[in-house]
Image (cartoon, rainbow, N blue to C red; front, side, top):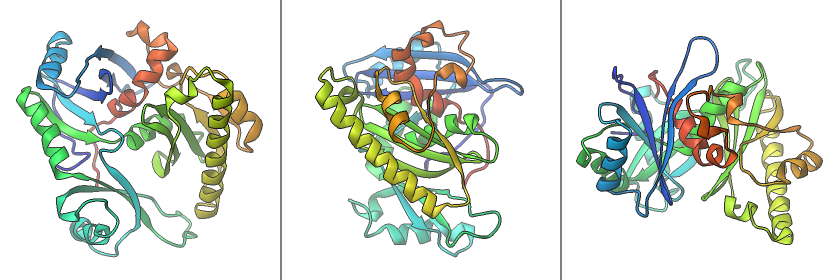
Length: 314
């Protein structure tokens, strides 16, 4: 099984994310009109979340055994690279991309599971090149994640990544005809994405963790704020040069619970900055616990991955 595989199943879709201190489980129902409805979102503490015993317990307690499952890789478990799209037929695309990756990965390309995500070109034909994202992870890691669900007798059909989970949320908040930048933080660091017309155009990692943002030492926090601002300025400038046909009209800051960052970014970036809440995207009426900012932060990317639905992909 590669990444992003989708299989339709009548019982519905559940996403399980393995966090450093437990499991986050989410189920979202898209509706024809209005915000997607969060049917389930819960955090289950665990010393070691990646065990059959833990996964079986969570599935049993939440009555999820008959659902189809998706999961998400964490920091250090994959590489996301940008390459020039090979000029080959679609059925030869992954082979051609694999050849290009042989000197780009930190492990042997023969040991890699890969998938690709296209970056659309300018509809008016003004773009100079055609690029795509390539996701690569070690075969052994993918096989171990598959085995974890198989040994728990759960149907794993999707292995996702945080960048695409964040893309799913960003796509619902875009202003028509404008690009949208979004910034989130977790234990792996910061994640900046830019989407346009529901597609991912840019992804950047920022080496500042949520723990550092919540640091009570104001001097250390100021250093983090400066580092984030500099990286955002560089990334937005780079994006503007590379995709000058996309007008990014604002940066949305995902729920983090860290005071001061929103105001600091708003005062130091030329791009307007707004703080978002999950209720801007989802109907949270069935899960009152998500009114808490800390829970919104913990479940942010898991809910984004849970927005994935059956559709055709590369």
